[in-house]
Length: 178
Image (cartoon, rainbow, N blue to C red; front, side, top):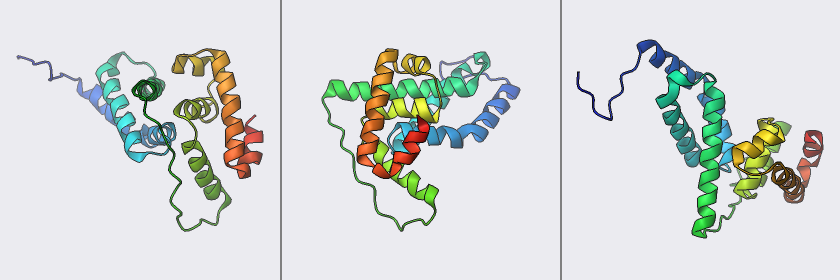
């Protein structure tokens, strides 16, 4: 059987396992992608799709597929925001559209947090998402972002201060995160 570089012979059980993983973990990966991209649904979809495509090529050798996929997503997002800096583009946050207010406290907080995160720099957002949402220790965040632990600490400190300034209503939640 001849095989071109685009064809991949996959064990049916591996393919089934991969499909089950994608089906089960896609919603969580999309939430992470959404937060890492500052609330851009299309970029989040691209981020997750790219990470899953890379995972598929290594599926048989990966022992922890979710951790591996998240690491790919972190690194792809870091590469994206680093390339923006080299191109000299300026990222500007757009205010969130005013939808009909949800009466539940958690929904309001999510909306405020989403808008506030969108106003942070990509690096600040990545540090906060990895440190507090993913609950990674500082050394793992530093490793994922390719910077020092001191940079993670100072960026987290400045980012939390900025969030307090942008959205004072989050102060209670931010204090609980410390």
